[in-house]
Length: 424
Image 1 (cartoon, rainbow, N blue to C red):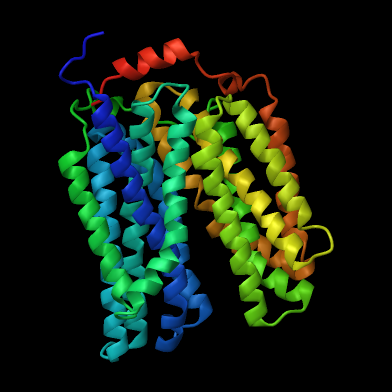
Image 2: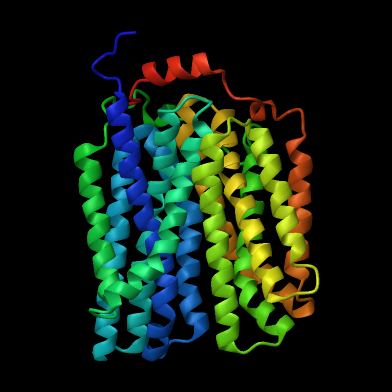
């Protein structure tokens, strides 16, 4: 089959996916870097824990609100401009935050002036940075067959997840030069990634539809409503476990702060590694339907959450988080792929934005849901996650979700991969 000048070659496609992987890796590094470095620095500046959490909460709210906007905008402008905008916004936000912390250490600005500026600069990440994952997922959808969709989406998720693992180590290495060096180094990394995207990410065709013609996907759309609900459940479940974990270990095992940090740290690392194993090894190597993958992930997650409901020990806790991480690694790509397969090619950006927005829901609502329940019953947040996961399991059996069935056969898969043009 001949190849036109506007089609993406296999080499270009591989290069493009590699560039996106590295750029989303940097976003993941930024997420864990902030969580690792900001609390102790902020405490030295005189900020309380509540004030620090408010910085992250506003950014998460903006992420939820803006992800659908940028996803749809990528259907109009093209994927590349939105990916670039997100990376530049992330780089400016991270570098600007480091600069504000440096100013804070000099004591030149009043604390509340500095704090307000920190909130606004971090908000740049939620406002603009949310565009990169949405447009990147749509870029993948444009250039993968239905059979490849899940593994392509999984690679994007794995990049972000790998970044969250590398982030603390990167921060520790750079902090040897200066405590604020990680912020500036990551900003340079992000802006360098944006330059590489601008120069080397292939996207030749411009969108043919005008703004008024772009599809407006609503969260009530019956094609994607189940997948958005599942995305929210996955986000709430993961956030509930991660945010309650340290308190739960300390209270149920009667440990001090140092012992708790050690056990929780090992558990979180095991959880992240299990998630990466699912996304980088299991999903690419197994030709499973989205329904099978989603069902397997939900059942695995139910087992992991259920282990947190039995008498607790360090071994049980770490094992529970590992099993849950494996389930999360299977579920989230399956949910994203299901939503992508449910809509038309010209709606890929819109559905990617809505899916990306669900990832931050847990960060916003868990403090208002899980924490009050935890004060009444320590295992309460896990019971909520357990029953929500069972609800998801029943949803996967619905006949209306026919899009979850088996992937394309190998012959169709190979033909579509070679002939798929570079959309836009």
